[in-house]
Length: 148
Image 1 (cartoon, rainbow, N blue to C red):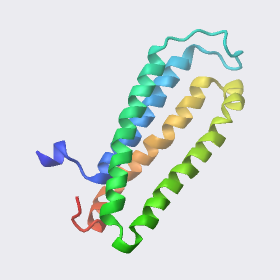
Image 2 (image 1 turned 90 degrees about the vertical axis):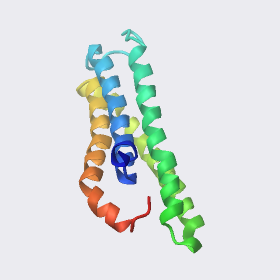
Image 3 (image 1 turned 30 degrees about the horizontal axis):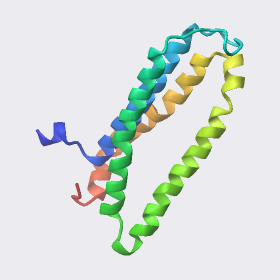
Image 4 (image 1 turned 90 degrees about the horizontal axis):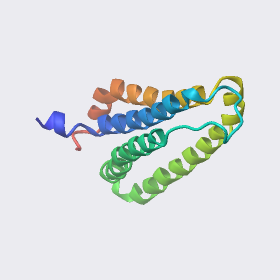
């Protein structure tokens, strides 16, 4: 039962990334009624899609952040723990910068294709990363030397 109810760290990360991807799929599904190149503010879309996206993104974050912080403290050498925590938060800052740069492409992508296509592109990235983590899970578990 422990494998089902308490998966390994890489599987928890994969679950979190998959939930983030599902949140973007909800946004893509909600944005399907917006035609390509539509003027902002003239199309009405139900709030349920935004609520679902927030729900899935929050659940994904709850799978990622605490697990990541826990594994940084468990797997880092004791004299480098502080440095690796700084690296963890620096990686988050870099990821947020890249997300901002990617988000700036929304106008060009939504004009050429659609807003739904933009959200599907963004959804594909964490889902692909989740699948990659699931494939690497056995190797990563061996590299953790039994730390749970």
